[in-house]
Each structure stands twice: as structure tokens, then as C-alpha cells.
Amino acid sequence: MSLYLRGLAYWDTDAGTLRHGDLVVEPGPRGRLRLAAEPPAPGDTVRDCHGLLALEGLTCGHHHLYSSLARGMPAPPRSPRDFAEILELVWWRLDRALDAELVRASALAGAIECLRCGVTRVIDHHASPNAAASSLATIAAALDEVGLAHVLCYELSDRDGPAAAAAGLAATDAYLASGRPGMVGLHASFTVGDGLLRDAVELARRRGVGIHAHVAESDLDQERCLAQHGRRVIERFADAGVLDLEGSLLVHCLHLSEHERGLVRRSRAWVAHNPESNQNNGVGAFRWQGLDPDRVVIGTDGLHSDVLRSARAAFLAGQAGGGLSPAQAWRTLWNGQRYLEAHHPTAARRNDVVLLDYRSPTPIFAENLAGHAWFGLDARHVRTVIAGGRVVLDEGEILTVGEAKTLEYCREQARRLWDALSRP
Ligand SMILES: [Zn+2]
Image 1: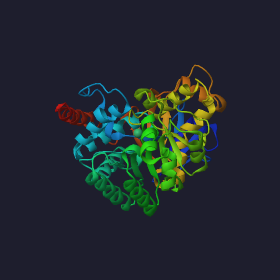
Image 2: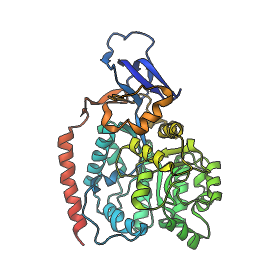
Image 3: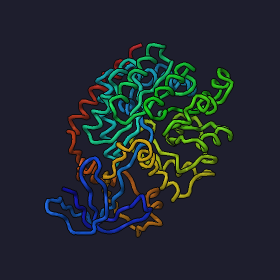
Image 4: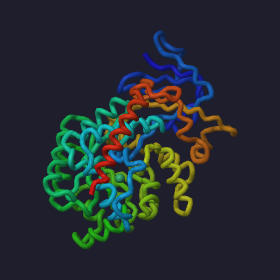
């Protein structure tokens, strides 16, 4: 039995055009979306959608769900002076404080926000060195409960010592062995020694997945790579085989030389762009030149879950020079789903739909939809979300979990986390 949505305007991402009519949403994990060529079948659920705009579910190309309980948290013991101190004083203190229950609460909080923003698929990068073992299975269960498709990985690093690195490798291997979509995660070159890099690439090869790593987010990553390894980060990763893997995802890529840009462009790797995070950390601006814009996905880097907002930020940041046209930027928003179809097909559901109650004062057509996206459309217009062919958010209400009760639980857990962070 399908969902039969009557009378909407539907952005057909594959065809790159706006269609008007009735939409059939087939049920089940392999169900598809199609424009109706026939009246509803007996048993179909028919909904009147006149006046609504339908988009495919959005994909967050790089998230850190574990940071969901950081919003409004106490300030660190002293103000960070640079990017290295932002990591040391804020994020690495936070990830060390996470236990299994905090991992679950963080995933639930992030997942609820994803649905409210029309995001139905998430590519996540997780760190919890004192609760690594079952962390990915815990996140997967929380996302399944809320209704999100997911590709998960655990952030491998030598920063917490050899036992933590070994536990991260074991957690990754166990999760990938379960057959769920995932990757091998790396923090960033400057906290990953040669032995761990080799082990990570070997594991990725054995499991047939890519590496999901932070790359040249700040100058520091390049400076330390040159000092310790005599090469730049992309050169080091290329030599280790990261760029030859299927579907490696290189996050940030701000401080790349022209040579490194060429290596990335000619490789099989994709890039994840997180414009607001770059602004927040003051690490520099992304440059599109020399990269393939069709292999750049948009992420939020755990700042929030609103990927449409991130894509708008990417478009606006590019206006200072060398950015993308409105239409090119709009295409980029959908690259996350194209990445999943190419490399994680079980997470690339084709029957995720977002219905937006977008009351435009001006006409909407295929050629100007990007203009509406950057200057009008917003997560506040999300009215209904269909994920995997079932309605998971309707008329502003989440149907899969009790939102008020879950958020109360998240706030309790956030207090517990903040208390732990307040201790010296
Ligand atoms: Zn990140």
C-alpha cells in the first residue's frame, strides 16, 4: 500500500525539474517515488497536498551527533586561543565525558532536530573514547527509532593513547561486520600516527568502505604533517591509499595546495563542506577552485542539523568570490544523496519526501527554485516528513518518538554531562 499525495509541486532531483501533479510514495526500504500516472489503488492512503512543495529528503553529509548536548554548555576552563585549543579545551573534553547513555541521548536529540529540518539521512562521525565499544550500535538504534537512514563511523585517533585507538578499531570492525552501512573514521592527520593510518586503511579495504576523515581544517594539520612526515596531508593520505578507496569522504579541505586539489579531483574521494563550522572556528574559507563541485557534499559538522541552512551558508560564503551560481549551489545540496547511492546504497532511500508549506509571494518554477531556496525556503516550512515510505513527522508533530518526553530525557542527560565537564 502506497501513500498517494495529491496536487503538489515536486522537485524531481534526478531530472532537475519541477513537476506538478500527484506523487506516489511506495512503502518499504526499497520503495521509490514517482509521479502518479494512474488514480490511487485500493488501500492506498490518499492525502490532499494542494499548495505544498515536495522535495526529496535531505542528507547531512557530515554530522557529529555526539555534540547535540553541547548547545549552551558551560564555558571551558579558559578561552581557547587557537584551533588546537578549541579541540583540546572543548571537544576532546566533551567526547571523553560521554558514556553509553549520553551517546544515546545525543543521537536522539540530533535525530529529532534532523527530522524537523527535513533531513532524513545522516552521515555521522562519532567520538566517545570512554564508551567506544557499542557506541555505533547505540547511535544506529536511536536513529532507527526516530526514522533516519544513516552511515556511521568511529573517529580513530592516537590522542587518547594506544588502548583507545585499538578499542576504536575494534568498535569499527565489529560495526562494519554487522553489515550496517558505515565507514572507517579518522580524526585528522595530526592525531593519527603511521601505524594507525595503516591499520585504518587496511580495515577499510577489508570491509570495502571508504575513510571518513577531517582534512586540513586548519593550518595546524598541514604544519604538523610537514614537520612530522615531510609531506602535506593529502599527499600523506594518498601515499597511504586513502584516496584509492571507494567513497572516502574528506572533510573541510580548507588548506590545500594546488597539487593537493589535483590529487583530490583525480581520485575517487568526495569532499564534505561545512561552511558555518569554518566560520565558527575561524579556520578559513573553503575554495571551490580545482575541486569537482559534483563530488562536494554539504554537512553541518555537528553545529546543528539544518543542512538547507548550511547549503545557504555555502552559497553566501562563495559570493565573496569564486563560489557557485545559485543553481550550482542548489545541485550541491543533493550531492549527499548521490554520494549515498554511489557508495552506501542501503542508506540511500528513494522514498524519503519532505512536504513544505511554503507560501511564496512570487511564482515558483524549475529555473528559479534555487532563488527561492537561498532567499525564502527554510526549515520552518517543513510540515510533513516521509522517511522510508512512512510518515514520521506530520503537521509539525513527530510520530516515531514522543518528542516532549525524549527532549526532557535529553535535558536531564545534558545536565549530567555538564556537571562532569565542570569538574576539574
Ligand atoms: Zn567534523
